[in-house]
Image (cartoon, rainbow over all chains, first blue to last red; front, side):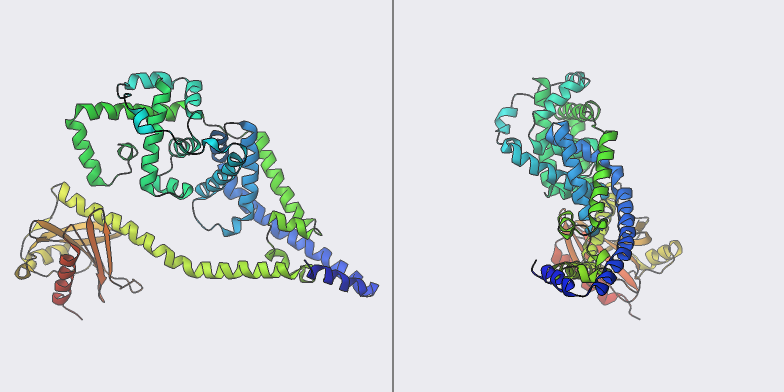
Length: 203
Length: 267
């Protein structure tokens, strides 16, 4: 930040004629830069706006609150746009969801760091719930409010993995890439998430 | 159970679980409950679509971010929004602080390094994908009672049969003297080619040797992969690609490879 000051100083010492030249030069350049920028924005929007629903859905389940979800989506799109140059993959949705997730966690951590992971003793707690029948589950599932309440009680790491698997239909590999965990962990975490949800739905 | 439910298991484990569910009532009930739950989540959990207002908000914030760049003057704002310096670099060199040029150079350097590294990074993925196909084919051949299309320990029976079915003449060698008797041959389709699958036996184990013509730019380096308890060994000569897949140990497979290499006629 020292050098720009120097430049400014240098231009100030020049005579008015050459200063006028610089001004003229700059105007032309801006028109061109504007053109370049708009094309990039169009490309970005074409690639990423189709995933707006997926981005919002993930943020909404993670944050459990519409206002926060919208803020996170907006911030995530800005972040994505900034690093769009670095995106060379073919899976734009997974790439965007990674950013949405990271942005959501920033907010979750800032607001209330309590519920991100589970410290519950699931092995002990899940025991004795084997007698649930498929009919019982299906009966409860018709009720969207009940389902939402049950999912909202889960820790964030369970909410996100259920969303990615059941609503976005992503493979274990894709989920592992987004959550930065091996596919074996994806499988075991999904199993724990489902077991806990089953318990919440039926108790 | 969850891996099975999600269709994410390898064919062998999947088959085992399927078999077990047929035999075990308790597990079958547990599975049905689990499947009902998965169905319930699919149906019951609301999908929160973005509102039109959110869409407009996102679009206008992106435009504002662009505006910060194009309305110009506020270099600091540009930096915060992280919009590309490279677009302006060439045009307004005199107004741009040197730190920006450094950043632009770093981005370009990263892009160059990235574009050089990318093909190399992709290579393992291609191999992994092929390895999956190879194992699947090997497993299927043992599972579905379709090990061979032509069952013969005579290389002079197997080779002509394959030659009539394929557009290349795969080398077939007999290694029965070395403890790897030829069982037969089969047609298969891998990596977008029709391929010859030669089946050899090692004690109670089978080895599938997949052969197809080598492309000129193909990677000739030997590769050994171990996955899901199977050993895969790849090599190539001037004419052909070879992939041997088996549950025999790696050193037996290596011996097998050397024997095949020793007997395949070279140009």
